[in-house]
Figure 1 (tube, rainbow, N blue to C red):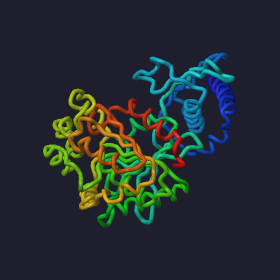
Figure 2: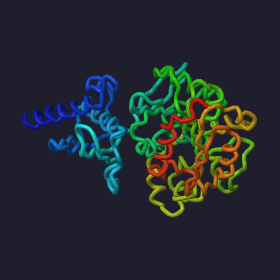
Figure 3: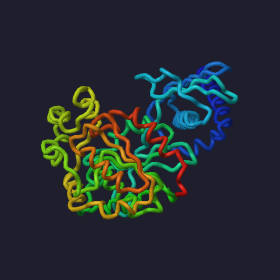
Figure 4: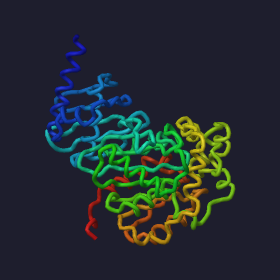
Length: 381
């Protein structure tokens, strides 16, 4: 009973923090109703004493705490605390102004809330991560054969950014589609998914590798729907500068998703960058991989046959961030330079890593992405 009363007192204290941020606890509960998140350890040390709620098991309490962590971490009254980031705590910031000046907020951000959604007869496994209200959500298109969990490191590094991601048909937990599809059909499916989930306004779009092609198609096909565009480790499609033959031939087969030993043997050569020198990254990445379903991988391959964005890249109206790895065996960095040259409102950022820098360098690339998404200058150009 004493523990329950203490928990209640702590919740009341957290309610005051919510009210200071202009977000009521009831509104947070309503926003994340039904959410059961991964465990979050939150410690807020304020002038009034310590508030510690570790691994809260009550669903709405945990959801509210995680929402609070996101809201506070995105406040303009925060600055990064040097040296505070370590392996055990994904985020740590200190409040510099306001009624809780001096508070240190630390915790592990919530990841995706998984659900199955029916979109015009196609069932999709969808992940949604709530974020700070008032900003456009971020729609993610993953690489070929990749299930949504593989982008969790990026989601963790981009705490506070609302995200929507789904396993394309035949990948991860989404059943294979009845017929093959093209990128235009997948863009249409994504647009209908957003409407089904209740997102009617503009979204920001990020696509990685194969998903970068889908992201380009989505931005071109639905210009009013796409506010900002982020293209990572991708190319203009069939008319690209090809990668190394040894990497491309391995990419043509889903074997790396089916055979863990094969993945560990060829992963460094296939993805390059940090995977070449840190084999533990391969083990960690492989733990989250799920095998594609049926013909799903081959349908993904067919979707890109003959497709290219080169003729219409100059007509993309969105502000675009082009990201590339300097040691990418699959998509050489020259392809990113071509994209940045042809897309009028674009800028290029090169990371000293391989094909999967969004995963291996998530903490490094997240501030670049966040600044791009939050910078409203030039939107009227």
